[in-house]
Length: 114
Length: 109
Image (cartoon, rainbow over all chains, first blue to last red; front, side, top):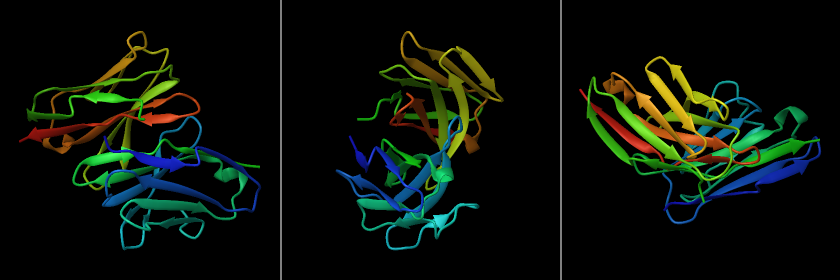
């Protein structure tokens, strides 16, 4: 079946540094890519949606200059958390859509900012 | 690989009928969540059931959890055309969060 490889699975970084998270479709091309985050004891929250070749659409309250999303190709999307702060510590997960209804999720990245 | 497996992969019913989707998983979990996703849109959280709960209701949704069988079911009663979407279960195992492959539900008006 379709697989999305997300890495790193966990990362600890110092406050003020930037962290890049990658999601790669291993055996299919993704028409649309989604990025989510989940704070402890809460459900997933959509951060942004991106289509290849166009800028990402950010959800209300998500800072586009802080969370840089690059839809580099039909198989690769990246999320860069710039100048990370402890409040950015969260679980980040991507989803790649193939065709009309096929969604495949990465396994997530747990970010801890110290 | 993803932990959750869902069946059926696709389900087509008439408006007003009930829809049942099942999810199985492999390891111990803290909780299990169900999400809906309309085509081209982001996930919408539907309901969360904790590992020590057996059944939970929310409106027309009924979720059961059987930790001994490592399975969960989502029942949508009195379905509507607007319920047409993909439905995913997701298991929170503490360090990892796994989604199932999803059930594509079509409700025919």
